[in-house]
Image 1 (cartoon, one colour):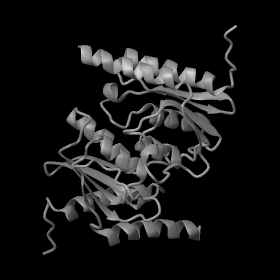
Image 2 (cartoon, one colour):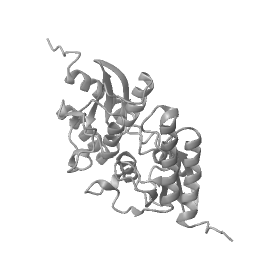
Image 3 (cartoon, chains in turn cyan, red):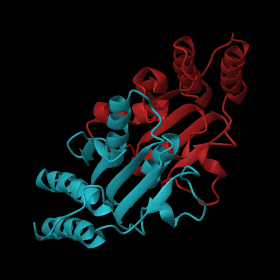
Image 4 (cartoon, chains in turn blue, orange):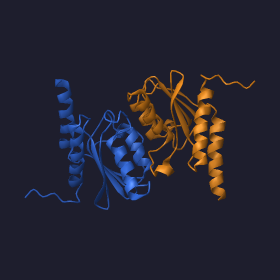
Length: 151
Length: 151
């Protein structure tokens, strides 16, 4: 049986991957995110920078906005962000402002990811778990750019 | 005559201050921004984090989104952001993604500003002009927090 614990990091990352696939299907760079509060998914989002013509429309930013809307409060101290790619500096800065409890990401991003910086820009209480389903996450991104090159 | 050159940094910062005053009047931390393209203001915004219940609703983020909408393209390589306070890490990251030509800010922010980081997180072509009308900008913020403490 290929059961996935519904409260595991892998389970929630699979949900973020479902969001990333929606971005792929919409011809957006395929990044997806969900935000989890007390084992419940309270927001889902995928990258919409092309559709919205807006560099700030990363999956994480939309997920944070939607989670705060759901909770009725702008701080997300009980919430963990699951995202298929290591957040960029903008998104990491947003998680700091939101006081996120955790960030769990899939693929690393050595060029644009926040973790390349020598100083931490996260909230001091934010726990980071990298590399969850990283192969699935990076394969989707790689497939997207391979398709682009073949056009 | 107290004329202000309509294309000077001081002129555009005064416009950002007008936005900041709107935030003040709405009981928001008083930060305002405008984005200028070829000497024309193409977007104006002020901090709306309380009203929108959203930590990402900084003046700069809204100004970037609105400017891209106005131009019909998400890159702002011909644009300069005027903002009354040194941008935070999130907003600086957004200016990087937008390839902003310039950032001109008023008051510095040694605690939360992007410039405290030892590595630059801005786009390599972004030119920064700090300290324009910094006293007016910081006085407005100080007045806001003084009012809060007296409540």
